[in-house]
Image (tube, rainbow, N blue to C red; front, side, top):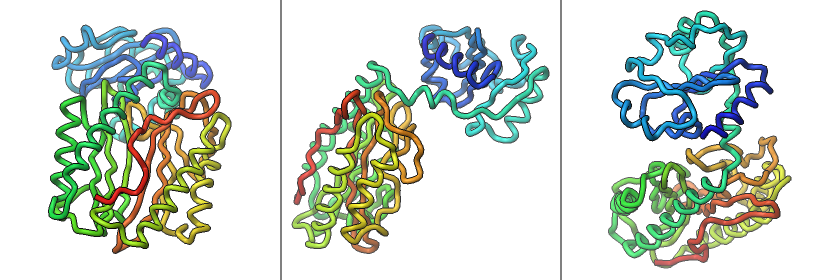
Length: 352
């Protein structure tokens, strides 16, 4: 934890900031290990403080590392501690995670500081995964692969999407946490990229999309598979083949130095040539870590290039309104020479 704070302090010097007020809880967890629901950090060029309220007094004794700890009132900015009264020429605030009212409160409490909007410096650090983080992500994906294989045994006509989703989430909670709300979408619902799940009962010929992930010791997995209830309709089988090939082409581009927009284009251009370009409306993928959506974004408008330590999803999809959709998603680590695929679930057409 202390090394992560030191790297943040290096970024403060780069950005000519005297310090940073960290309010985003995933960022706080990354920096000091805190897992509670109310916390705030002040990181300066030479010091770091963590603040929470009485409810977490015992928890932070062993959980929070690498910084000084203070227990304040539940409203953490109502009674500023002494270090907040220091003279700060430029004190950064995480602009994407602070409401206007909270920013006004902070400006009032840091009376001798010039508060400036700061870019998301901690998320920049979080992008490159350390070996221990890679280990946790891999563990989360192993759980996801196992649970997916088990739940496929329940797939048959008449089963509700909700029943499948609840079973998945129950199994995840036996091993860790649910990383995000599961998507179990059948038939026409599978044409909605973020459908969630409903009381709809599975029918023969349905495309059935699972987008699921768990969290193990704070780190997420993310995987999507589309299967079929009974024999796949000819048109959706064709869509599946197109998406599968598009993903293969995108995966072939994953290596250090590849522009993220080039990875997106590898899948998007192929899908477009097959006549489904308008039915692939989202980006190719995103980073995964403490949160299920992190840097970098594999998007047509992205400006970054892939680098060793990036963990990203590769998830092209084609969605036919009223009929169904197909998405296939793997989660991979960018290595020094290419990539390592965490996802083990098969990608051949499954007709259950």
